[in-house]
Image 1 (cartoon, helix red, strand yellow):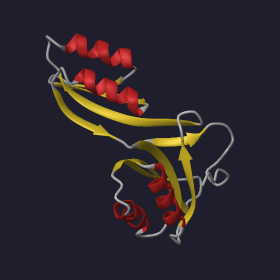
Image 2: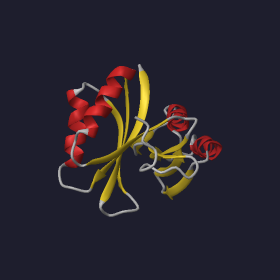
Image 3: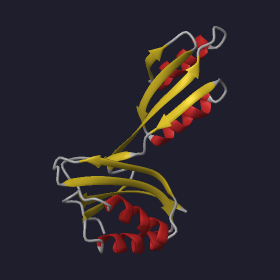
Length: 168
């Protein structure tokens, strides 16, 4: 199974997100990350989807997405031609016996301390999916209180934009 990241540029209309995600469900793709955001135009929204599947089925999905009336364009991202990022907030138990180890690990991964209380600490890390996974796996040796994680956001390197990069 291959892992894919695509961005779907859609008209900013009621129900568009449901129609797009329903297409994934009908094609039996499991979405592992979903991010919806505004764009440089208030008439358009960008839906970034990370999912796994076979190449042939992915291509069929993309062809079906293009048939939706609110889809303007679709762009696929690879590690070589794009910059991708996720955001993680993680709340850890603040105990004297593990405090310095946790803070050292957070620092080593480049996480910022955004809240520090007597009983807890919150760290923020913006990085690649793999780096966030590594940080979470390391922190699982300690007492995690809460995790909140965004989906992946991606842009093509250089001056190419989603309206110019129709890769399908």
